[in-house]
Image (tube, rainbow, N blue to C red; front, side, top):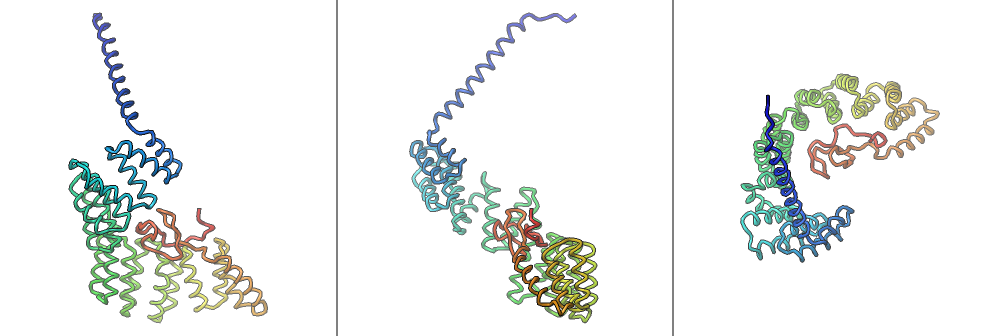
Length: 390
């Protein structure tokens, strides 16, 4: 039989009292830290929440004057100044801290990290790079590496960008294969501009080695061969895109057709595009197919093509094509149909747009890198009509 130990009745209240005292100490410490912050700090937070940034700046400046020893308050103020575009004030404040404060090594590193952000935001990339290179070995190591990569991309220093992205990949375990492939493509474009096709071919193959689904590399390789009159080779490069990203076939549809025309095989080119359209139903393919059908097979076949697409998926683009083909087939009503067609075209305007999946930026033409947020391959290869955008 288990005997009950009565001395436990004395121990239990003791542990309860010990926990209560510990909790009281934590609460007192929390209250002490809260009351040490100026009231203007909380006003500033409230202004930030309500997006009143100018008032937030004034509140945080008051807080800094009251508690000038707090680096955290300085950093918060600097962050707001950067956000509203007062970069010069943020730079001067952080420089003043470095020059006129007795900082320990950790504090000095933190201030330099803030100053580096100021320089980056101001577009002073040389100064930002100098500071970030010094921060690569400390607690800001990964942040500094990311910032340096951003600088190298903006400065179009592609070899440095490749090295930094490779380093980040090893340190973080996050893949940078897609980005690296585009850096190689950018180097290839520089080679093309310098008439150095050998270098361009090498860089494009490096891009494919870095990321086998790099559509851009195969497009450019095909372009180089087509320029040299090697149209069969060019077509083979463009065909590979089907196995990388079928939706990108619309980017090379007209190129494929042009090369088949150079080979005196336009019908074969049209047949290939029709096969792609049957499999993937890309409207950008249809536009090229429609023009080729109109040219090679006549307006009646083009009209039938447009009618089928209008039934399958109604759109102003298909309606415009239907009216265009019908106008050629109906001479008596040609003027009326052309008037309707012009009305449709005015309604279409610039409705077909490429929309960045990262930031929502809308462009009239395809970009490999978003002009707004700089993300690679964030704009789809297939444009969307505005009324289809969710």
